[in-house]
Image 1: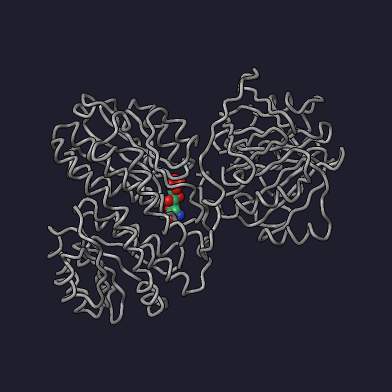
Image 2: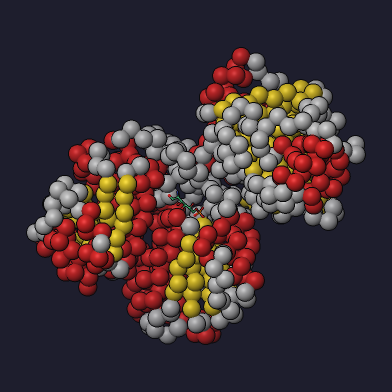
Length: 609
Ligand code: M6R
């Protein structure tokens, strides 16, 4: 999705803005632009395509000045063209702004502005804001914005430059992320924390409809009613290195290699030795016992983590769990009330559908919680104080890996916690599970050494036109994630199937040489899945099986190739089996020459519906 950066200080703004934009490239974009105050004149440049196109333009005619804004655009209204790229200006070029989000009443505003003589130069919804600010201009951008914002419907993160007030950047947000980076000599803003890490880790979070005025040595924030409020900066402990590739060819590979550390950090934040930390999971024993159900809502990979959670929670805590994709949940008039627990899962904490689902659940009176990786994100703030954090560090690759594995880890911890509080398992049983869980980071580290054989396998099979993933129970949930991972970065058509369901139709697609990846980590289901392997093998499929060590021998008798993961408690096995399937997707994509970290059409954080 679109990215925003802004800088005001004593240094030339252009390189700082370009560096910030480069750190937001991972979000996905198709054009970019910057606007910089040159004295009391706004100058801007924008270009379709990669940031390097804008870089080339700026090399030919650099923009001087110490206050500026920049943007990477992911097209929603209007094609990705130079003209549709941000920043957009009013007709005189005295106001320039960048915008993330969607102005839903843009057509009505555009009609009104055209009637008053405004000539538009782009097809975007954003341009209406620049003309509207010009129309309402009263000599102060702060009060002009305060009068304009109530006229905008939809979502926005906005950063505005104004020729009449050089040196200042005005910014605001509603349902779209925007954070400020504070320092003594210069101030920054961005749509995402990694863009700020090279300069500061003191982050000021803006609430919906607040307006901030950034000057080189000061930041002033006005609440939605226009009253000035004190700053309440948050210190983020992410470091710059964690947002850099650190010698790896891709962020995705680096992030897979960070999984043992991410698992360890997440576990130690929630458990002390073999005991869950008290109060970390915000639900009391009484509440846990009176619950009638848990509803988990998320999108994409986070939804798949929720699916694993369903198996674990139903099995351990004997609580009915429903899992829904957020874009469906919000429109299906869900049935929830105060006895239902609701959990929104989102790595970024900014996914528009998940945020809307969380709001809907709260409106219905359900007890709401969130699971996210980003402190201060919209979803975290909306669910506060009931927030479970993964400690994965910044995830830059579009394809989620370390965030997924830590989401699964938290789901398992939640299962243990609920099971204990509901009196289904004893303290000893819980502590045994946690002891096994404490072994997982080291086992995950060992598993990473399978990478060479995964890469060899990928080099033999990367030209497949389609791949099936099959499994039962938790393995089916992991198969769904394995399949998404493969298709989003390698563009190979792939499907995940409950292994027992294949024969009800899909088996018709199996032919000589079809690649089937079977997951067998659940001993009580292994024989059933082995039968399904034989079914597809007898129809010509080539089968790669990923199983636990103790199932290796009998699996080898049925499949063409077997990769083994260390034995562990079956409920924990998906944490280990996730690693080879992520590596497989990665190496298939690399072998096919795909842009692994920035797959086509995708964005890291989907902040529009
Ligand atoms: O930030 P979120 O966890 O809410 O994002 C949800 C999905 O958009 C995300 O998981 C997406 O499916 C990734 N591309 C998966 O790799």
